[in-house]
Length: 193
Figure: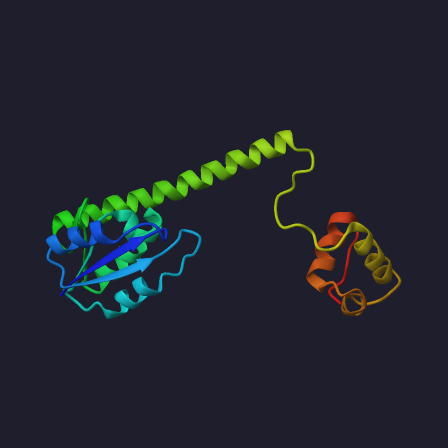
């Protein structure tokens, strides 16, 4: 069976152009979905993926109708390939077990890795800029407990309470207490209790 998948992003867009292309490609049934980029759940697409059987073909008009990015496209294509289901992106080509299909899948793999690398590079550049230009910039999660709260808990610990007792009294986990004590008082040696 050849199944078509048509997707539009907004209420104003129409399916007709995609439907005509899919019918010209010889699909037996078309699944249609209105979908916005703000949500990752596509119930019609998920239903279609479950319906596909070995040797079926999933046909889409363009890659952006199939997935939001190269990484997602690669993941879905790999799962379908493992299930012996071909993907035909009309403006790219047929992705199946043929040498050409494998080549296209390899290219998508490289694109997905490139996309991940670019996101990582942009993130690192942003952090570097923020460290240089923003004196209040801090990496990692925002601290839940203030230095004052940790100092109060530290005093309870110094006065002979166990970490568990301090944790129960302060509401701060033992792991957080140990980590923050070490940050505020590097010379402090704590026992495990």
